[in-house]
Length: 89
Image (cartoon, rainbow, N blue to C red; front, side):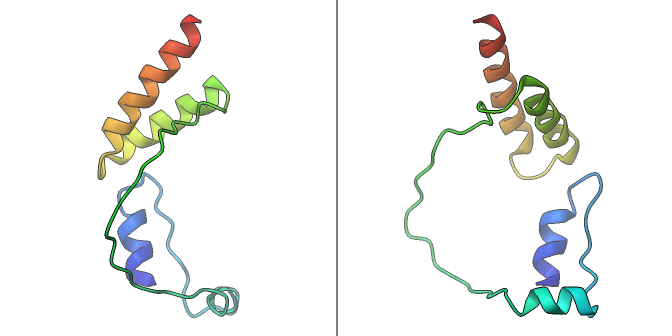
């Protein structure tokens, strides 16, 4: 679990670290089941936070651009295009 948290948080501007070994986190771990699966097929849905305010969408775009991990910049570009379309309507 520690490796997974570090992997997904490491590219963020303010990464979160889990204080493993504390009573609180140990209590949470009792309700978490980790598993490994093989993915045979992926289907996507086009969802770019369009149901949120423009301000909130822009905050997500800014966060994605700062992280510079995976395909965050490309997703930020798509979200920004969507914001521009929404504001022109």
